[in-house]
Image 1 (tube, rainbow, N blue to C red):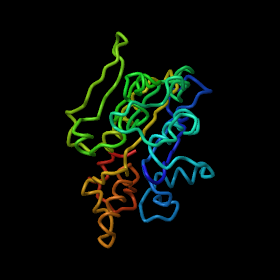
Image 2: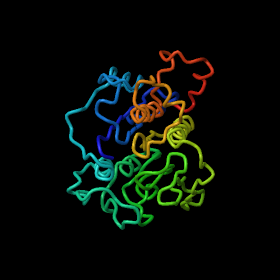
Image 3: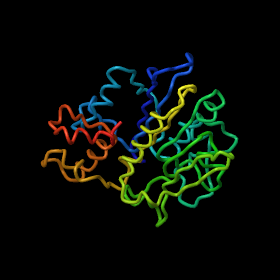
Length: 273
């Protein structure tokens, strides 16, 4: 992550049949390497209508400094501490490196879980995996669907020839299940993460407050984008720039109403948040 970590926190207060009044539902969305000006409300030619709507109706927090690379930024986001305090001053965790966010750090999902929240993670972790104790299901997430490392092929889901797309949860006996989803090869991971998140929200037990950490890999390299996303931009935009635009659209921010798309195309909205 070489540019900017974008974080959107959405507090959902209108889910039906709420039986609690003080603890809001929280969805935290992270975009990986999204440029500061690569959103519509800052004048970009990238169409991001849903983010623009959140910016218009919510609060924009921009007088803050974050690390510009993956692991240090995520470690700070999870722990609330500067990278210099967590050992991440040295940069990103490399594949097979025996390093991670220290086990004596209390992380955000752990604190929320202690306070009665159902906690779910989707997408990119990159805060340590050299022992199981450093992985998401041991750091406060009841379920986790995504990758432990810093990047992967968007369709192959591989890094260094190994599939890094896992589904973690605890079975009825309390045993951790680690299901490596090789069966999903060929499916675009941004769509998989969006669909999984929508499923978690829809199936949430309304008797408990809900926390979802949704950390996309897009638009981080490699720049693999569905062709239909790339072609939504005018032909005069350079191909590499179109791929970056396509990455951002595939986060779920394409405005179907203003795009002139057909009804059948709009019905493809299950891919989009």
